[in-house]
Length: 469
Ligand SMILES: [Zn+2]
Image 1 (cartoon, rainbow, N blue to C red):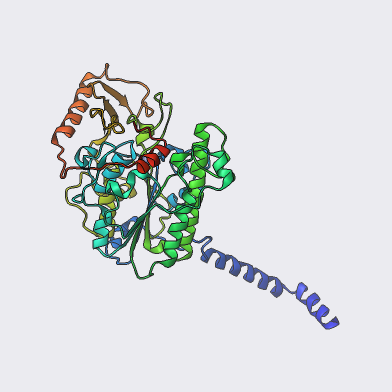
Image 2 (image 1 turned 135 degrees about the vertical axis):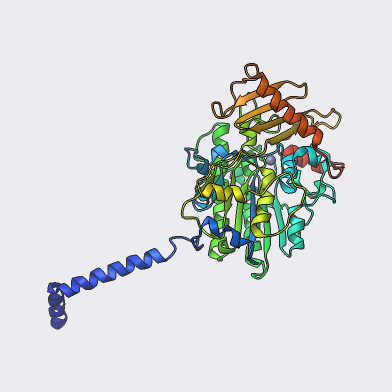
């Protein structure tokens, strides 16, 4: 003991001893920097590496559709509340499109456009009994033909198999829930569709655990709790108004998706997966007097997120600020992974736009963007009542079934509060003619099927809060 004490005393007086400690500390610091700070082990890359993705034969696609997610309620789009930390983090090393628009404000019409890359006038899917026919070519079919395992997990009845959305999927199912936990059910009596997005994520994780690591896969996950304003008590932190409940649900959904991303990361799958996050429409909180969606086409129900996370991390998240549309999503994804998609899409690949944005270039003005909604979508006895919007060069016009036009300057008035159609009749006329051209030139490449909805189906759709008559 005395010898040991003497050694320590001598060591404490030696400058070599302190030098050794310094070396060890520096060494520990270096090692801590080399190890990933979290589950995300993706290497860093540059936008120039985008073109190498098409040569890879191991890339998967995780497609997350957050139903009813308006862009300006997410941190990655500047929302002041911390509702979406996991997705914000994904965006911090990925690509976010900051002026992204859906082509309708009603799930089925919007999803039909997004999957086919066609504007609503060309899909013909505008009423509640319309169904995508066999001749429609969906990404799930293209990817299945290319050898992908194709899985769809969804909770919104408007994308159910009888509406034709199951085409090309090896498995397409609404995860069988164990039911909302008792407390959740008491707190959310309106949440009459059973289960929650936790069931969806559990099913997705189960798939990741069992899929053959040599298989390429396409996993489509369609969440529903934001639509239903459902959250659990630990996420319900923002207050008790409808708008707060919406935020609570976003926080809960983000947390569930965080679990899924962690699972992907821990399995080393993020390095070979394109993760895409988008929505089918937003949600109104009386900005134009209405709540909910599927009634009009203002920004609160059509401006949605689009986030693309690559199999590598960008040092800084890239913002693509030029206007983009949901019909562009699949032409872009097909371009990125080097698979040929349908030839006649209205949408365009955004890869050039991404590259221009990374170089700091101002892209040329894009094509006009259209959105469409048939106000009679839920009432089969009623005549068609289509309304349209066109967005071009920073202006948006809305045309109602009687031909009345509203016009907004989105730069000065992004919330569309001040109709300037009377003071700008020439611009109004130009945008009106755009809509008329859109209607006239569009051709439906197929005839939308019509389906009979049985009682159970009607009951389930009504449970989503839709008012079918
Ligand atoms: Zn929806």
